[in-house]
Length: 108
Length: 110
Image (cartoon, rainbow over all chains, first blue to last red; front, side, top):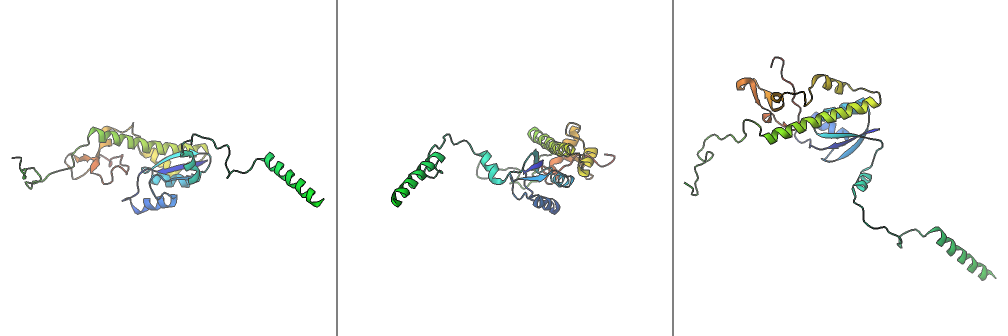
C-alpha cells in the first residue's frame, strides 16, 4: 500500500524546512502526484506539509505516464487493421508455408 | 464633483484600510473548507497507518492537541489571539499566509 500525495497549494513563501520536506517528497510543482510507502516516517513528512497536500491510499505505484493514460478520454474508435500492426498468427503461417513451397520448387 | 479629480478617501491622502477588519461569509466558508481538508488529510494518514498496524508520533500529537473543525468555536476559526489588539483578538486573515498554515489553538489563558 502507498500514500498517493498531490501538491494542491504551492510551497512558495513557506519556511525553508517545509520547502525541504516538499523537495524530499518529490513535490516540486502544484498538482504533482507522487507515491510513497506507508511508514511512520513518511506520515511525519506528510504531517509537516498537511495544509498543502491531498492524500489518499493506493494499492500500487503508478508512473506519470500511467496516470496520464488513465486521464485520457476514450478515442471513440477501435483500430482493426493497420500497416503498423503486427500481422496475425494465421496470416504469418500462410506466408511461411507459401515461401517454403517456393523454396522446395526451386531446389527441384 | 465627478470630474477628473474625484475626492476619494485615497486621493485626499487619508489613511485607507483596504483589508476589512473581519472576514466575509464567503471567506469564512472557504476557511471552514480548508480546516476540514486538513482534518481529512490527517484522518487518511492515521487510518492508512492503522491498517498496517503502525502509529506516527506526529499524527498522535496532532490528534491529542488540535480540535477538529467541528469541535472548534467560531471565535477560534475566524480570529486569532493578538496581545497588541483591543480585546486581544484580530481576524485570522491578518495572519501571514493564513490560507496555508494551521492556527487552531489559543495561548494558555486566552
